[in-house]
Length: 520
Image 1 (tube, rainbow, N blue to C red):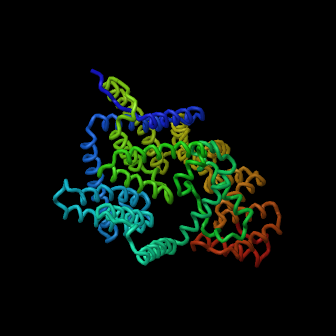
Image 2 (cartoon, one colour):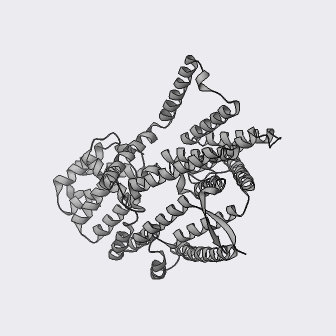
Image 3 (tube, rainbow, N blue to C red):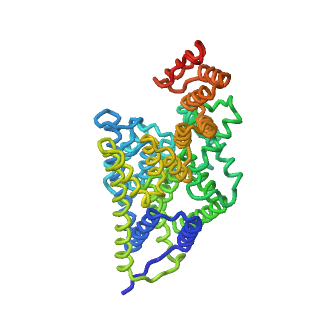
């Protein structure tokens, strides 16, 4: 017997629109299909369980995982476990942003059980709450700390039914000063990080202005942003942001990323979806839906200042929170009758097949990377060639392959591959690899263009200027070589290193001796 599955009209419309856009631009890959199949299975799982039970399962699972992740981070802070990253507290993540985002999204569920009459044992819950908040604080994530404060205060207001209309003027003034102090404190705590975001958003606005309505296309930010940053620093050579410049792969704002890649049209569609979700929540307000909305609020706040949707847990929690709110308002949904067992079996087999295929080729790539150190060159290149048809849309594979060819001296083939890579991401490292290939092919003018582009992308780097100095010497352009040498010597250093010291020392020697005495 066919089982009834309820599908949200808005969710179905957005999903179809997403597929249409991806197909039109030829950007639908196997990993994207696998991603969507996973959500189909999750959807069916949630639809087949009662809403109340779904909330218990999901919230309990999120709380348990967050508790262990919090203890993991605290253990890193006190030195029991090494983080193996630049940051001290990251849990199993690569940086504090992903770590704090996951913990922040769990706080509404912990608060739900603390203030719920359905749970009598409050002491363990308070312990979990303080452990999670402590872990977020130790991670030094400003956004995570801000979300912890907002959610905690919101639950206190709801629990004790505080009416701000009855609050005295002096108390309102004190509260306003407290909010301003918190904001200023967050700004001062990581001032350079805040200023760095400002310059990123400024350059991103130039991208938006160029194609405001339908955007530049999927993954276009990584492919184009650094070119806009290079243009900005080329026009503002004395900018205060030069020392803060770096490779940028995300605008640190999910909403801005949506506008850049899909335009204001997609952003307005998303706003309509959010409005519908809020209306559904207001129509049927429960303690469960309140915690779900607060978890979505945590995701929204993080999306303003970071990149939470780069992590799978954000997609899972977002999807499950939205679906539970929609399932609680089933009268607003259309009904589709499908043979449920067939859907589950077919989707599972397809998802498994795609996953195994992706894992197989990724594993072969990993093995050849390991073998590169011990095997012969021709064997390594031949294996890369066999992997190329299967991983040719993987930007990091293309860059890695091009870099290996450059290392082995196959500069023309490396140029071809890195040019393909530029369609997916185009940053300082890509420009330097192109320039190095052209340098060894003795195409000086083209090499100079790419070294210059790399320099303006990250004007605090020294290597591009050093390479331009080499080309000036090879071209017997002593005036340009001296000019570049002076620029390098006078250039402030962001992070002192042996490489920078050697480059500056070499330039000093060049200015003090004849050009013919300079050793390469």
